Length: 197
Image (cartoon, rainbow, N blue to C red; front, side, top):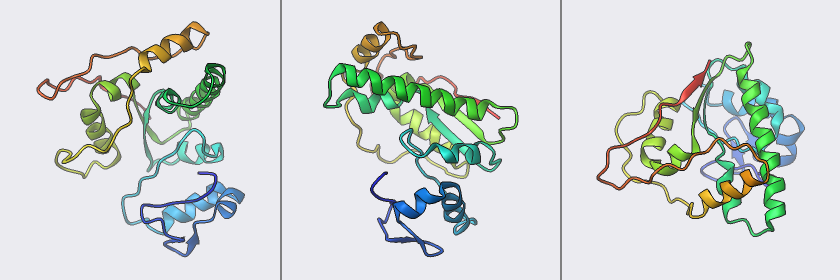
């Protein structure tokens, strides 16, 4: 986030006395991330990378053989669904996010990239969110056991298919096909993710 650096506890400092201060983080993002991870290097660690975040850490992530990245393709569409802006502004943002996503995939697709990237389609995450979340957790932390006890609160995705249609009509090449929603009694139906190693 531009205005703050936050962990789950919203503390002012991270382990190792690393300040949760955006100006310090932004001066050297790779060094900040390295120090953040090193302070807890004996434990499993996870963090969220958003396409609005600093792209300077992408190379470090792609070349970290210990890293597993789980990505939902076109997940940024959800943030555009209920955006309070004109469609032209939404289209411009969608074009920018699509370019960033393509650069992200290119960074992890290079032959010298050693991180493990697991990609899930957005339609799978929308159609069967519980199975998708369990699959993501199992990729991030193979030692985790058991099913989810409770689903996190989710935003509505009503209108997603219509938004994708409008964006495609304006020339965006989106890899998204609406998936039928499942009811609670149905068996999980999700495509196997693909991995880039």
